Each structure stands twice: as C-alpha cells, then as structure tokens.
Length: 386
Image 1: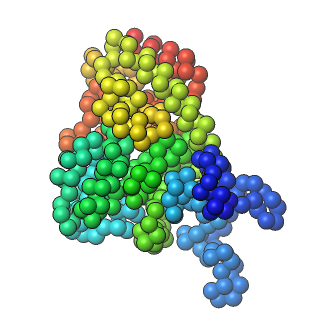
Image 2 (image 1 turned 180 degrees about the vertical axis):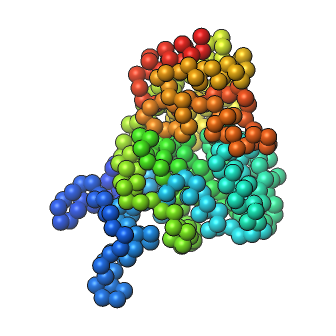
Image 3 (image 1 turned 90 degrees about the vertical axis):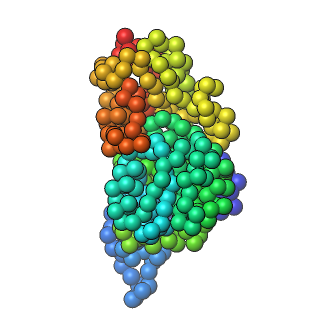
C-alpha cells in the first residue's frame, strides 16, 4: 500500500494491507515467515533490502511494524518480544540516570515494577499522579528533569481516563514527551498520536494479537528523531519480536476492528447486567455516564472497550469466590483475547503494587470480555454472583 493510499484509507483497510505488498515472486497475500537469522550479502556490505541479521531486521517483523505504524497513524513502528520489553526500550532509550518521569497512580503492576524496581535503581526517579487530574500531573513534573509523562487511558485496572490532548500540552510545556499506553483501548478505538501524544506503547499480547497465543509489544512514534533513538536501542538491547510471533501478531491485527466491535457489544450488555445486580457495588466502565471520565472518553475513543472492573459489596472473600465459581469466564491473567477472562487484581496482576500508593481495592474484580455468546457470559456471572 502506497503512502498516498495509506493516508486516505479506513482503519480496516490499513490493518489488512499496510506494511506488506503481495510477494512479487509468488503473489502470496500473507507475509512469509522468514525463519532466518542471517542473510546472504551481495559482496561485503551489499545488503538485499537492508537485511543482514534478524535482530536488526526481519522481513516478517518489518511487515508488522509497517502495519502498526499505519493503524496508529505514526511514522515508525517497532515490534518487541513483550510489552515490557517495549516499555524498557522507551525508558532506557529516551532517559538517563538523574532523569524523572511521571506515571499513573493506578498503573499496570508490571509497568510499576519496571519503573520502581529496574529504572529507579538505575537512577531514574518517578512520581505517581492521577491521569484524570491534569493539574496533578502538572504538579508531579520536576522542571528540567522530567523527560517522560507516562499515561494509560483507560488505566489498568481502574479504567481511569486521561485527557490525551490536555496531557500532551502539559508534557510539551515542560519539555517532556507524552507516552500513552494504548493497550486497553487498542488502535481501533483510540489513536493517541493524532491527539498530541509523542509515543504509543502496546502489549500486543492483548487486543492486537487477540487470540491468547502470542506474547509481544509495540512502540509507535510520530517524530523521526525519536524513532532513531528507539530503533537504535531496539537493536542494541535485542528484545525483538521473532518471525513466528510477528506473523501471529500481524494476523491478529487484521481482524482487530471486527473483534473490538464484538468485545464492545458484549461489554455494554454485561455492564447493564452488573449495574442492576444487588451483590455488585461500583461498576467501573467509561461508557457509563456516571463514570467521571465519560465525557473525555466519549471525545477521544470510538467506543468504550471490552474491559470492565467492578466491586462486590460483601468484600474480598466474595470477590475471590466469584472468580473461583465462574466457568465461561476463565480465571486467568492477561486480557484482550477472544475468550473472556476474570481475575482478582489485588492478588493477581497487581500483587506487585500491594502496600504501595498504587494498591488496588481488595474487593475489585476485573473482566476481559470476550466475543462469546453474550447470554452465556451474563448467565455465568449471575451464577457466580448468586
């Protein structure tokens, strides 16, 4: 797909066609899996297509990276072995000891562990702030030292919404870059680079891959100077997506739009059920008008996603019981797959933040709503809650 066609095409067309042209030899419409670690050179330094070694570049990965850039409307995309490998490359590629970053006060536990247990001993300091409170984010910035303002929107697991355009202005006024973890929304529902963000990061394990069969991460940037720094560190640090993983992730991306519509359809029905159930307290979903970030989410998201969190009235043990009794919802970590998952963040995905300022409520349950028959999902939750 040419740059001109890419700029004029809809999301679904870009997701399917961007990054790869049918093979000129065979006409294959899918990128081949180039299971090669190295490439024959036509004389010393005579590289075919720029490929010399698969850590530095692999045609299967190149196709995925082109598609990721297209759907996020960025200039360059980079595919990694995991979401945390992508995050680590951003931090070490764009920061140095003595620098400072702002993170969400309800960040994903793995992100907090990376920042607090890996980056902080290296010399990078951080301050948490509520992404929904632009003034709090601005107050957390250390003039002259803050290099990154890092936000999730919606956040994991409390589904807090940050105003990307407002946060971009705050970051840029301080001479910092805005990084948006877009994993929960997916590129289909939200494109942060079009709203002023500088960098988008994903765990492509989740909605982009979509089938719980591959682990991966992605970074997409809109500035070529930033892209050069990310690209250098991607190669120097080496946590790249392998060709088989890149192929599976690219295949998942092609169906992202139709899957996300079904995730959203099912989530909206389940939210309606949960809000009327007597055993359920707060239901946290950006699509609810009672959600404090509803208006911002409505402005910057296409729909409100497939993630739901809710609190049970009877406390932590009841939350654990609900997780244990669910049958159609699989008890497990991760999210964004075609199958529905249920988990207890306090003891599972967010156990690493227990006892910190990022600790989550003990009675909280997180749902990743899949694409099964929605009546079966509602019936399963009703049995588990009763």
